Length: 573
Ligand SMILES: [Ca+2]
Ligand SMILES: [Ca+2]
Ligand SMILES: [Ca+2]
Ligand SMILES: [Ca+2]
Image (cartoon, rainbow, N blue to C red):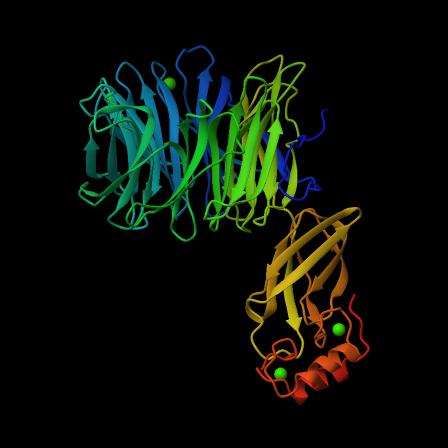
């Protein structure tokens, strides 16, 4: 086996990432079929996994749909199928409702393609199925569950061109709204929907691409942001100078978009990002991802809080690879990773802890076969864990889907071939998050609330070190996810207090509770309390000097002097 994901160039901070914790893996083979191909997946509120895809009948030519549900412990719960023997069906989109029923979109391909919106119970009962047949071509792109009930549908349709529709179904399958935006009567006649974002109960943002602006053909495709109201009227429309493929909303409500544009100097398609204020469509920022230095494809965009992770595969005349960039809302990068070789970034998700997870495919030689790998990134850019997923087959395992479970784990899904039998199935891996330390950092003799103070954590396990700056919450509460496990020495330091070490036993996942009570009195911040600290208090006595005001009450007085005297001679860890 080749070394794990050889890094070249800059690396996302710590290269000492630990192996990740795979809770279980399964190979789902559809009974009485010649193969199952996973297409969409989602997790419900309990962490159950729902995968849907197409399966090939044993003797009939036209594939149909299978939906499979697994429990978080790996138990197979049920399989359901949908389709006709004389037509081919494809899974297009899935969205889980708060009651763990789910909406599901299917295409039935024929000379007239037909789309279906369906609702299934959490037990796998088909509650209703509504056909959508606007034109010859009908394919649903996206489903969004409406908090007030029902589902919003982004639909691609057309006949000799491509337009889009926004449809709304209520929870019982009645179509309430049909806003159809037909293809333009232009040379390309093409407005292809990319996705939608529900802004509030009455406004939805539609993202679509068009190779023309005002009927003039462009050198590369532009992206349109059109916010529509409840009757389909335009609230605003904006044009972005890139072709968007991926989008994700940040916790501050702004929208990140990842796409490509024609770079004249390089004579290549290069990656570009935008950040947009969705309330009015105004551009908050636009930047190019120059680290993906080649003909690049916008493959992955994931967001945690306001932090973004963007990845793209690229090619130059002499080499190829993939580049990932982790960055801030202003576009500044806090970490870049470039892998040279045949890699494919497949998907990325933010997780419960704030970590970002990326699913990568790597092509292995002799014989050529794809294998999936995962990377876990802390939101400060630290690579906490990475590794290949344990093999389910010696042949191709092509990574397809990545789902964040609400319990903090992720599900990675691949199309797995089985060598001699060559009946593909769905490989499923449940991967537990890296371990978390949590507890309290108690700042002794400190009057103000500790929330907002920062503590410096240094973790050492064997030859590996992980450093992090953690902002304390109410009562000094903290939480820190790390890639280190086993016997880990943890040192916590807050300037003004003495550092303290503890030796902890850290599992491959799960939470370790550990609290610290830090001794006050180190005015000069050299990690010991002695004459020097005493002199600082005495010298500033009667002032409000913040360094000498050890207890933080705004005055340098007897109380601060007593803190030093009481702890005099103490040395930190
Ligand atoms: Ca079929
Ligand atoms: Ca049709
Ligand atoms: Ca000192
Ligand atoms: Ca004081």
